[in-house]
Image (cartoon, rainbow, N blue to C red; front, side, top):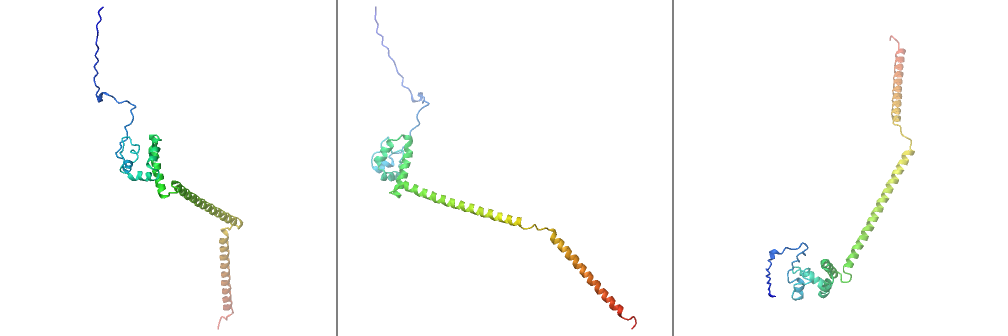
Length: 202
């Protein structure tokens, strides 16, 4: 038997970037971060490629990190962000900055003091609204009582007939005309009597 050694050579051709088709479930491109971020610039340290503070403290807004750093501290901010998923970090940074601004205005109560003040204003406005509503109800009751009194007075008074003034005027007119006619006849009779008493020939 003859045995022959066969050598198999395989050649691999490099794939071009255009030949690789992107998958449908490819992750979204990462957010473009400008380095160094405001946090690293203020802390005077090198801003790493995966800096946890860079997406939330851009270099064009250094006051944002300065306020949060004065109240919470850089190490606490970094630790807090690392414990949260990336979907919640932006909201957490906004909350920390808001609380830091409130602590700068009111170091004792912070945002709780602002909330209490707003709640106090809400209670005062609700009290004023309730007082105004009570006054409106009182005025409506007074108006209803006044209308009820007017209706009672109208029911108790005798109905005024519109024919009474006309009848009174007519009777007065007839009586006056009759009296004037009788006085005119009396005057004529007196004049006729005077003429009758005079002699025919003087």
